[in-house]
Image (cartoon, rainbow, N blue to C red; front, side, top):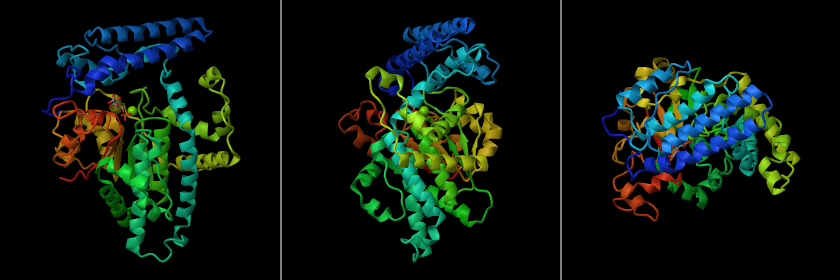
Length: 480
Ligand code: F6P
Ligand code: MG
């Protein structure tokens, strides 16, 4: 079920794969080692401490093997069905070494291998070495969180009384739809750039401000960085479903990162539900700590807990604050009320079953989504029931396109393979580019970007696509 187009490999010195394996992964492993080491040193239970030390040693061994270009060793069986698949693939690939192995597979293996150290333990089964980092990053996005919470609450009020909205009271159906599409694009853009966590890119959301916004220089500048923009097609799909009068209209979000990105994903989910563009939103988290910051179910509850206890969350000095002798600014009562309202809104949607979390082991397997229809038939059938499946972030895009070395002008639909035309799944990728693979660009665009400063040069690596500065929003309707 894999593409014949060769995948990016850690052996390719001209790709971000090589930089990742040699420079980035050792740093990530060092961070994980530091985290568990600290947790162990605070642990009073002797047996748990001992086991924690063994896990630390296991992580150090993994780092050693990586840095010394050893073979990827078979995963220890922790009772999960995906282990056999990983080990079979290692064998089929001829027991590759770290610096000459497909990037996508080896990076998935890295996180799966880390997870086995915890899952096979007695006392650390559910420990997430990345959890503290995820929460502290979320905490530091406080200004944007507060601003967006206020705007979301305003939008909620406007949607609840949209019939009487001053700006649209006398508008025609076409004008209303146009205004609605503009808000949809705004919400999706916020959700998209949340993946780059580039807070300067966030813009306004109100109906009344749309005109002003469309003229705004900053928004135009950001939009110019969206190299492919299929938001209109995605909106048309949801609008058509809404007009069909279907009672249940679902949108799925295959989540990426926790913290701020999950926050903006929930803003989008809430907006879709309150605007009537969807009746249900299904969120797909990961089962294990994954690519450092991906959402596991606990991150969802941690986020809601932070909102409901916002004062405590934002005003308690972090370890870092303590080290620097900084006292966090108190939260204003307006900000606290805004976060409470947001919490109330989201928890109602969740309690009423309009927002649902649906984990699946497929998301943390080692292969691309080309394998989804054949190897995860239940998940495949489920996604076909959705009006729109939104795949967030870089890794999901790599998995959709099999992380293969496509020409940049390859149509997105062609790069999706079995998830493309005829799949029956309506795919929308919201991706800020942090890896080499890019498809769907017009002729000459890749060359233009490579020619820009830091872009990689004419025959050099596709460096412009590594930083998250550029984005692609690609849609495929899944029809034959
Ligand atoms: O390309 C760098 C990288 O860290 C990849 O390992 C991974 O595909 C991606 O970025 C993670 O980003 P995201 O959270 O957007 O999937
Ligand atoms: Mg991620």
